[in-house]
Image 1 (cartoon, one colour):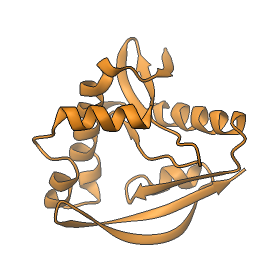
Image 2 (cartoon, helix red, strand yellow):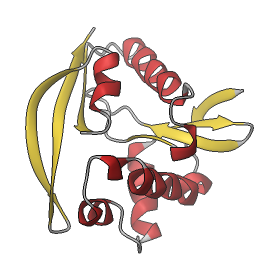
Image 3 (spheres, helix red, strand yellow):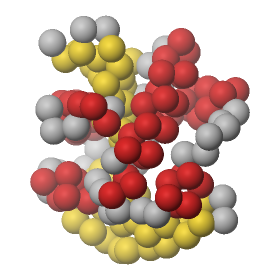
Length: 154
């Protein structure tokens, strides 16, 4: 059974691993080896990652106690991180997380949700009614990656 809960500090390492392996195993379909290595470097500073996670305050999806995805919702409607474990793609984890975030946003009175979305995640976001506002190139550790600013109004 899938459950969604709030982040706790002890999740940090598991979320880094999920982030790392999803990028390395899933996003490699749309990005080069150099790009995914820049996006998810081998040696991450876990103290920096813990600080990022603390600031994001993500929602964590679990199945039978195993972390299978996470996302966040910032006060102005930004979804900064959205990752589903590479072994759990297509099994409803992303749908459950997106539904949760949209419901939380409605409760908070948000009318607009937006995110910087990878090539890989674009069809998923489009499925939930997000539209591309602009295509952009960002630099990550010396690599240029293409992504999309997408938004949804409710």
